[in-house]
Image (cartoon, rainbow, N blue to C red; front, side, top):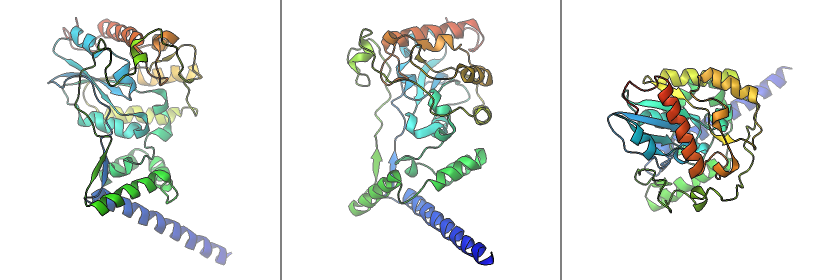
Length: 319
């Protein structure tokens, strides 16, 4: 028995040592001049001002609202988006939103349903390795030791994302340079009347375009205990007024459990209802959580009506 325990202890020590060496290698790359960083932000829409109404989410928030129209209805606030693509995960979405907002702003969180899955708080991604600092790891540890442990355990020399990161850093070392993945273009205003806005396909502007998006679903059952922690985390990190919005989905093509959505809406006290978040085929675009121009127009009308119906904005801030 003692021999077994000793062997087990040796294996555990080897495993821990291996993970520490791997983590040390990642942090060395991160701090080196050869690091591969990433502009993980989406191209946000709207112009930053002293007071902003910021819609936070994934790429859905740039496609699903007409920011020109919202701005035409606001007084003293400028509407804009703050978005990251889904693979970056909720932690970096919130970090990005916090870094690009002030206490003068009002936030509206509109996350796609998959972002509420626990595995999507800090998913492994090639460029993420070059973005996370020790402070980020500490923040994730404080939020959930379980999530951080799972993230670190998944780091392996067999992990294709990690291998790609090390290869990119090595190439930079050979060329004595650094690099940026997905360089971010300048912010620009979403103009839905422009026929060929570079950020959208033609199908976005053609409401008769055949809808071909796959079924929208949550891969795993939502962990409501985790979701309550997310709500508390957001409330603790965003001291300005902030609200929540149920994400947009296809009325006839989803496999969510409505009881889970009702619970989600209650936890976050969303300003919209589940029925108002559903859209028809001719209002949807690809990917399956994007609306087309017709859907964005309807969604913007819904949002403005909700904003006018309650005191979400300071008095006189909306026409």
